[in-house]
Length: 277
Image 1 (tube, rainbow, N blue to C red):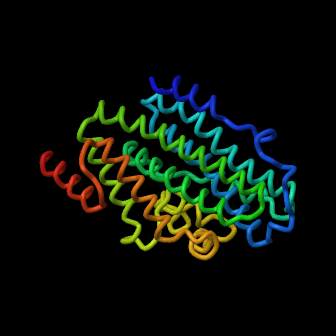
Image 2 (cartoon, rainbow, N blue to C red):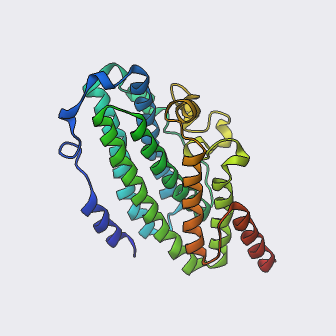
Image 3 (cartoon, helix red, strand yellow):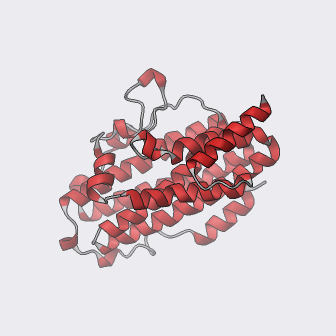
């Protein structure tokens, strides 16, 4: 089982909301209303770990090891939401999300293949790590910069944990896992083709609720994410390339194949599919 060691490693590095956030360093002159509103949207988005966890537990009912790890992942992701909410509660209470706004992002996700979902969330953690690092640079207020830095490090550790389960999946399922990971890797790393960076929170997950079936579509401002990335924190091509490079580098090691581009990964996937046929 991977869960016991993952629990120990994440426990050793866990930060404390009261002691590790420099609340006393708050500088009101360095926080604009525009910035505070983006913090609210990120807080609600982080709250969507709740329906994601419900999805993981439902679709991985046969895997108690991974399901147990969800207890750690869920706790830390909900703490991210709580840290952002607490920041607003202390310094911009009028913008703290309401219970109704938080509950709006709790809706059922359609069942999906567990291996593809695992890879999707691995890529999502890499992307969030970079988004939050970029957000920490955009903000000038020291407390929220510290919070985003803490969150970004957590997301990197979560990605590492997902990677361990991906390695285990290859040991168990062989090429079936490799095909699933390559398939989702092509999708998640091909942001230039899709016209937008893909993340679990802006993908459609419930056909019966379409088009109101993404986490972002259920925010108070559904258009917020693209504006945050493009106009506010300015997550540009350089940052995006860092995300793509990290996904491809990890896949190259995981699949033990020379993968330096999305095209390499696509060719690798087609090769596996031909072998299977």
